Length: 400
Ligand code: CTP
Image (tube, rainbow, N blue to C red; front, side, top):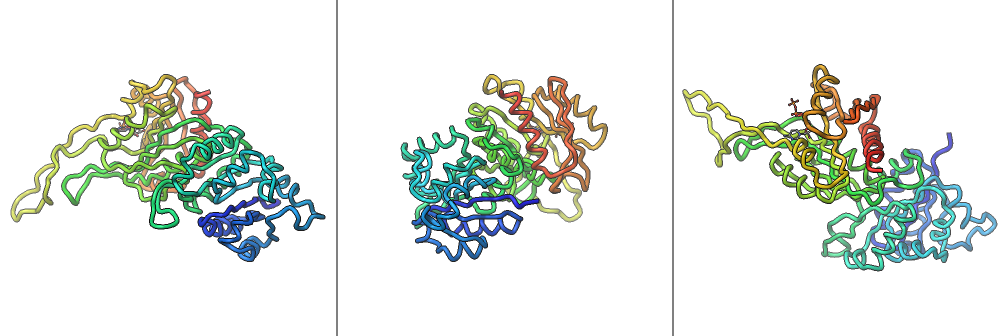
């Protein structure tokens, strides 16, 4: 099979150096990459670097190798075009259909998915001119990843940072795997909870669970790669933030509930993938609980935590909002799942079997998605991303 052909457009920002890492990831995972830098990108990273890392010639202008018509061919033959970093100027030229260098020519001839990963100073990103250009590109079917918040070129921080190259690579991988030209969740806002809550007993101890957060992160990552605005409410997870996703860290079930209720009014869909503790210690000891010689330990009294999924299902923050729950079961998986779907009142329930070695912390999952409308969708054993894609397919069906 031919290697997937990726065009990596690089524009002139300091984050151009991070595109070298993205290029490496792409080539090492079996993609044929043609780098098309802008002339100003070469002020940051030279043509020799792009050429050596990609194994392909590099040019910025349409006048090089004219007999090969590269300004038409490169775009026509691409399976994916990713522009990282995309500066305010490159976004503006792309939005206006200019064709004054090889990259903009390539963008006009490409009929494959196009991903922009913008990076610039916060003021430039927030300027109405840039925002309108981004909206235009999105309306035309391009995937424009939200920049990350963090340290910018100098000592300043804010929104405008290029997401981690590994995470941009993940977006590219998802977009190529889906094989559709336009993202289908553009204009949608989704809220995903992930990880496992920790209910503190004292300053050093907590009641927790084995959830790794991987399924919730896979849901957030795939939704972002399909164009959704994503709020990821992450309970005690140390996984890297997916590109373009707004991560809200929380600790306990009560904090998770507050974060979900805050985000839900703007959400088209809420997916509760977090493992939420059903109980918490009734009392929190301000100092570490010490063992006392000759004394039995004090029993731990538990109280119920609020059931967030049941609450947001019963009291929808928006008409037509789709609510999805997860059920981790060890026995009678389907029967328990059906009963739970009724009890919780959500639209979809992803039922999976768990055990010591199953699901928790693993890269793979296998599940049945039950619908309140009686539907049943089996998802074969495979990567957590595949289950996530099925969940979004079912959510998208219900939103449309
Ligand atoms: N959930 C929640 N709030 C809780 C507990 C769970 O929102 N206090 C959500 C989880 O995020 C998940 C779903 O409910 O989407 C199912 O959680 P699970 O623990 O499997 O089900 P329970 O309702 O706790 O039922 P049981 O303990 O009987 O298995």
